[in-house]
Length: 273
Figure 1 (tube, rainbow, N blue to C red):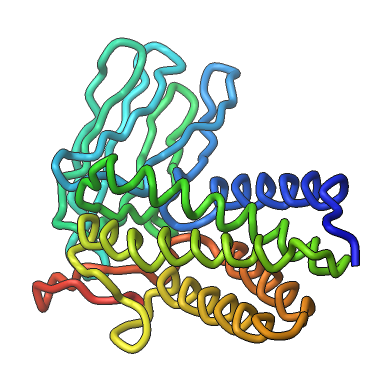
Figure 2 (figure 1 turned 180 degrees about the vertical axis):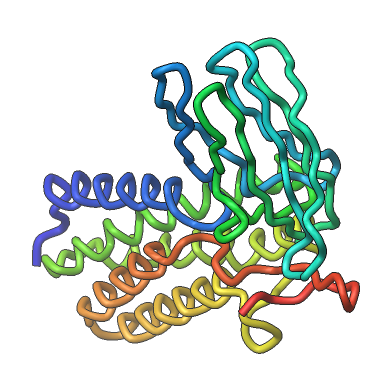
């Protein structure tokens, strides 16, 4: 049994972790929605917000591509059948500016933008497929930063342990303990605190709700706990590899899917289904 295979496991773990981070940054219901706007022979892609802190209105910024370009911002609470509220975009320098009114934590608005140019009217999103933005409470950096760091290292160490376990090295169990520790501290200790600040609830997963972020974290912790227990007395590296694969699969589920949502009719936060 070799001591380690870092020359293979470290590059593989780094690649897997970076790929997971990039995937998380480009998927999920809270990252900006990219839309295309065309005017004066230009065709550019711009981001429209899908997440914002509740303390302020959410700005919607559209670059001005030609003289006389104008636009309207239409929005309503989500999920409701409220009529659409319409507000004109105001010119500010080289862009058109609109604001979505602040909502309580976990409150959502659906919106779209209508742009008028010399050539045509363009719908950015549109009433049939509007963009949904979720508001959240501010999370102190002293809580959010270590949460992100621990979750990053849990992914990195999980991949490292999984590869080392494939080679049945002597060090895979120590890395597995570090993985479980980072996952527990970042997810089960700091995670609920982050969620409390952001959405007013410490835990919205099983058995209290359907929050997919909480539930996938719980699944990962269970699998890693099982892997540690089964490897305490006897080497069973296959269980570490299984736990690492499970964690990777959980990372492929977009962050904040089926997350907390404010029910405007009941005046309380629930979990979207």
